[in-house]
Image (tube, rainbow over all chains, first blue to last red; front, side):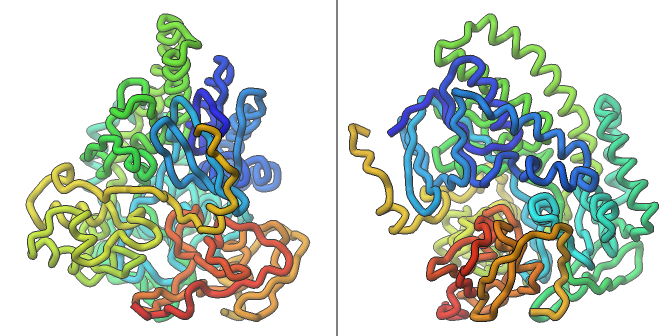
Length: 462
Length: 100
């Protein structure tokens, strides 16, 4: 089994930046990524799509090529199309690539697995035609595919970015159905000083809104009672906004109310996670370098708490410095000197977050769904069923698996975990930390017996 | 399948023949399979084993497993696969539709 100084999981901004930083410091790096080409979701397929669709996707996207090109380095081995399914002590990383299982080992591991869309369980969200806003972005970035008649539902800057990109591509969305309220905006103003430090983001946001307004895309704010209607596929979005009931016929619905750390890999290693009230999600407990309570395991980027692509890059480099020092490639003084500049940049990027988090809070109806709403898409378990589990004495998500299978389908809880924790916490009057989260075990992604059988022999003492 | 796809494609790419549930389709060579099927007008990728409800791509990043299809006999995530000529694609687990 090939051994590396550092294994990085995920070729998004954090992973790519960390890989180059570590390689420049003399470490042998292996970078495992599920996609065929580097970029993560934010810069998905940027090397192919940037030149052809850069004008639609914008400069913030095409800037990703700076990171993808930096992966061309003698000491970086980028294994593309590698679906990681286990990290074991030592550390041994098992993955599948091209229908074959394989393994590499590394002294240290940086988990840079980024974010997932925050689950948005609303009535009708399982219907074909309903997708995450991130999925809409991926369709456009990787495939140049656009929805002809789409409604964007939820809250947050990503909705504006997608709407503006759709306008530029000539297929504006039919409407934006936004859940944030005037009260949210007032609360956000408490964080205006931070927002002003991150003024570039505010200017960008205002420009996007101007493009959306110029294209006459209707915006409905403070939306409540949101449901997606349709028998076999999405046919309309219904909601109430400012006292008026609306129904918008459409073919596609893009949902978004923020993204949350993808904690699957870190959790499978037993890394400690804590609930973050400001971002309404769990994130791993880290030291200032991104190291977890499991020695040798680091987390950087959105997987450590939502910070955005630029901040993820800085956090990735910080972790790489720490790894280089612990591997004996960089003195502590030099590490700290280099880190100073990165920490300043990181603080600058983070400054706007409290404002954004307050201005665009998650949709309340999706955080505490109505009893009849499906919350576990795989096993089709409703919010009411989870609440009834609590009445029977169920205290945590692992127990609720035994009660009703929520979280036991193929997505392994990725799109119901936070909802189940929130529902049980509320029903039992306990905190999210006390309620806990699903225990995540390998395989992190399905692996077939055929793929295992095709694995190269690793019995050489490994 | 709908006569007009809810999705449109910006690029023109060379196409290769595949079948979806036996119906011939021409999809862009090397394209993301889930995206290509959506553009081709496929709106149901599978039915759930629990209630038999129809499902289609949701996350497009390999996390939700809604886009599962059977390709040449093996169940895969369509959003993690590239189109190649001759693929025999079927809805996943149709034998178990609503069986649980």
